[in-house]
Image (cartoon, rainbow, N blue to C red; front, side, top):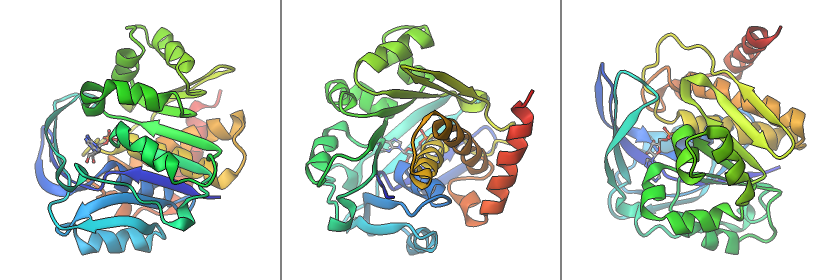
Length: 300
Ligand code: AMP
C-alpha cells in the first residue's frame, strides 16, 4: 500500500474572531500527511523555502512521513492568509504569496512512482500532468482537492485534471461553482459526468456527503464545542479518508463509508487547536475512541 500526497507546505496567517496568529505552519500537504499518518506511511511531494522550521520537518518525520520528495529551495515558503468571521464555515482569503511554490516542479523519487493512491492536494492544476508523467503505472485511485484560488485563476486546467481523477473533494461552494447549479445534488451529479467516480462534498461543521453513481452516503461532523481554527479541516478529512482506504486495501462501499467517518474524526481533532498543534499530542487511541463515539451518535 502506498499513498503519495502532492501539496503545499506553508506558513499561514490566520485570523479568527478571537485571535490572530502570524506565520504558523500549515499547508494542504502538511495537514493531509499528518492526518494520513495515523493509518499509513504517506509520501509527500512539495517545496519549502529555507525559512521552513526544522522542528516541523522533525515532527513530520517522527510521524513516519516520507519526505524524500520534499524540495528545500532558496527563497521563502508559500504564505497564505485567511480570515474567519463568526461562522467558521465561511472564510476569506486575504493574501496568497506563492513564493517558492510559484516555480514548483514536483519530482517523484523512484520509490514514489508505483503509488496505489495519488492525492493532488490544492496544487496548481497545471502540475497534475507532470506528476502523472512520472508514475510507472496509473494508481488505483487518483484524488484531487482544490481551493477557490485555482478555480478562479486556472479553471480550464482544473477541468482537464478533473477528467482524469477518481475522487474529487470539494466544499459546497466549490461543487456549486464547478457544477454550475445552486442545487448541490444537481451540481454533484454534473461533476460525476465530468470524470470522477466519487465526489466528496465537505460541509464543514455539517459533515460530508459522498456521491457515487451507485450510492450516496452522508455523515455528520463530530459535534465540536470549541472550534479554535478551522484551517486544514478539509485537508485532514482527505488525509484521514485516503489514509484509511490505503490501509484497508479494499475500496468498496463499506470501506468508503468507514473512510468518510475517519476523515471526519481526524478533521474534528485538527480544528481544536491552531495550525498543526493538535497533531503534536494526538494519539491513535483518541481517534479510535472518537470513532466509536461517532458510531453511537449516528446509530438508530
Ligand atoms: P483547508 O482549510 O483544508 O481548505 O486548507 C487550508 C490550507 O490550504 C492552508 O493551510 C493553506 O496553506 C493551504 N492553501 C491555501 N491556498 C492555497 C493554494 N492556492 N495552493 C495551495 N495551498 C493553499
